[in-house]
Length: 65
Image (cartoon, rainbow, N blue to C red; front, side, top):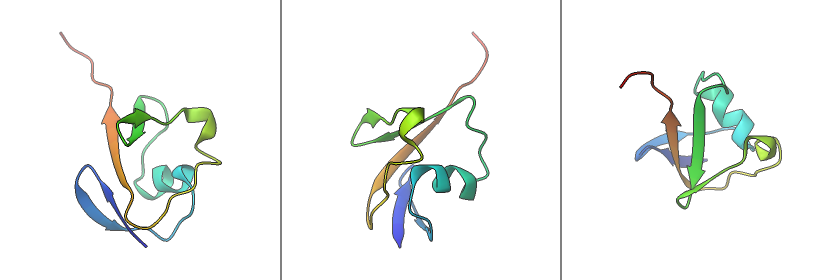
C-alpha cells in the first residue's frame, strides 16, 4: 500500500505503526509519530492499523540548545 511519511510517498507492505518504525529502520526511543496532527501513543504502535493513503509525521528528538 502507499502511504506518506513526512510528505514523502512510500510503499508500505506492513499493517501496523510498529511495522512502519521497523521498515524505516528507526529506534523507538527518541521518536514520535503523528497522524492527523495527533501523536500516536507508543503503547498503541502494535495495535494502530495503517491504511492506504494515510499521512504520518515522524519527529526525531534532538539535543542542543
